[in-house]
Length: 558
Picture 1 (spheres, rainbow, N blue to C red):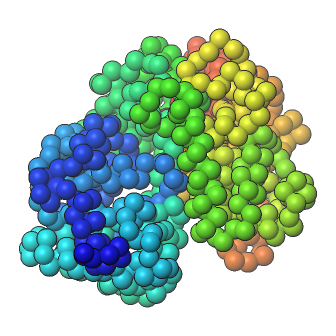
Picture 2: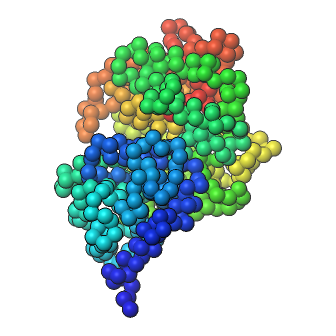
Picture 3: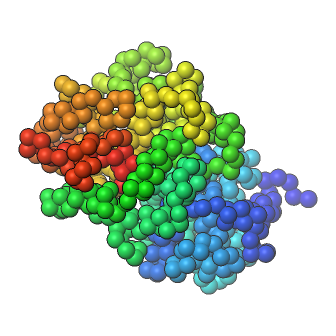
């Protein structure tokens, strides 16, 4: 009988994880097919279908995200969408790939849940090569596209040489999908032999943003019907039938064309708020945005709040102590936990690096290293001062609002332990959640509009919370959320875009930029009476255009 670690054992293990080779499906696929797909799934299927119809023969699709974020579920749903033995997902039947791939054209290997963990470092890739060779010669048909999905590639401990070996496995007519915890583990496009692959895709999976959670239609306590959720999908994409105002808004905010397009984007914001959405829609979206602060944009298979919290915290701590610590050889992973807790307690308050060093008990360079790895893991992200050339201070934001609840002190998050709304009012903590969620969505908006980062700056009257800029095109956002609603208009008026200082890439030389901010944005949970009456989000004040954004609308366009 072959022992553990033999080629036969690895092949048997692969057959176990690919039951569809025999009967066309598996319990994992059947379970995944009952879950509503998130937008990440639709993007992966859409992009893959585009390459498939363009006759791309060799593709590598790299996906990264935290432990428990949903990478495995996405792969299972993707397999179910491909197989010609299933009818999932029905809403994507327009894709040429959907329900057209024979079961024996697909190989799925969950590396963390297989024998590869028992191999010595570096030997796992050899066993994987044997399994893939068996798949290509004894399982897959000679003709037709092959799909190889490798889940949790961090189990292979890939260095540059092993990544090259993995690339060598990408044969003709082969699409390889990789998942890992950080980008560098799965990005094969920088390898020397990468030119043998026609297309690379790279995509992070984050906690579900607000619009995705509304489209899923569960957990927010608000009844959005199927027609409304379908329309939201159309509003984001010009590839679907009907108007796409959110796409128009993002294009306008990007500033890539003329200022008239920015004006068009702002006009579309008002139309979306007051013309496209009616009173009931606006009220429902307002309530849903407040509920979203509690849910954290997570899908769960239990309604028990304590179990959901335990799972969320366990996944996050496993990610910090095991995955991130191993990835960057962190000798004291508890310091990653400590910095995450500091981010939760301060929730976007300005911190000095010297204070962080003292609190954690390490030097500045080590703090920078910790923050770098937390940022790579999209766990904690820094925001820097828009007007400073060298940074002595920072603001730390957790990227998942549920982590803010779980890592805060009990007296801070009282009333927010459960996912459903309770009688306890805690406006201060709700504000912290709103501030954190708005930052996370501002990072997503920065991606859509091509901004370099999300920064902040202080005025005499208060804080401009989120500043997006690209080549001098500046979008400043002030958060005015109860109970912190004072001075928002004054802050908007005082903001001077010329205060920005940004160096050249890989240089200490300052860029000579013409900083322009045609609009100042105020994100608010209560629109001024004047805005509601005139049904226009823009108010002109002393030659300054101030655009008021309902909190829910800001989340919706990100």
